[in-house]
Length: 143
Image 1: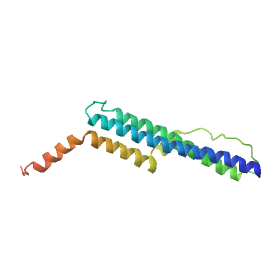
Image 2: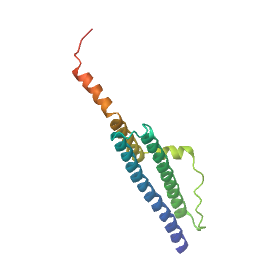
Image 3: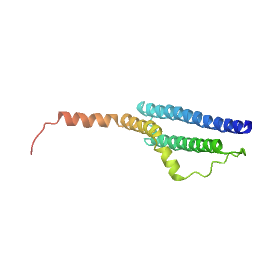
Image 4: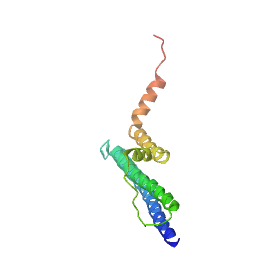
């Protein structure tokens, strides 16, 4: 029984580390994207697509850690159900569908999707304002 508790402790430490990595990645993504958007506002002309590539990169990286965390949670349940502990940490192979589920989960989808929308609005803010002013100030005609 002590071996099983030790094994579960090892797995729990890995799960905790994956969660911490995910939290740090979100912080870095937010900081870098905000810096790139503000540099673009200051007319330092950072590449237009660079913030979007950064968002996509961190979104994929964060999805990897969430996928690994889910696999280790499955391993944790498997070890609980086993009679004998072998201290194996093999979580199996990662399927593309598991990765896609993690990438488009509610937590990652809202965070990175929201960051994408924020970047789109701030990058194209002047264009959106021009379109809005055009629509509001344009006289309405039927023909």
